[in-house]
Image (cartoon, rainbow, N blue to C red):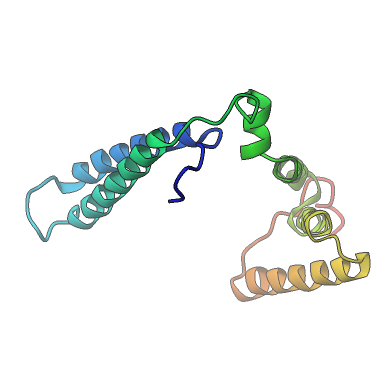
Length: 164
């Protein structure tokens, strides 16, 4: 950990949530078989959850010792959102939501192709020909692996069901 670094927006809340999650995981791991023996099914989950709890407590302790961020440097909700959820992530989350809404209507192959093209084009910002080529190759591999090799039935979509 870097000395003298100010606590970033949301860092304390994340550390607290990590401790809560680790404690819940510990409870769940204990529920598998308790402390009934060293060779029971719950030993490894309890060990992993215990390590996770210790690590989360360590992160929380070091986070609480950090100085607060100075006034006007992200202490507002807007500063928190800019720091934790920047515009590029917001756009990608919006794309995922649109993808989820469109998938039942136009099917897996077309909606995934459009989502993949839009995501690559937005994040990578290369020429359109390269983006289209990468999208076509990727979707061909996905189609062959899932539809041909594993014989997974891919959703066709309500609008395209009668066409194919």
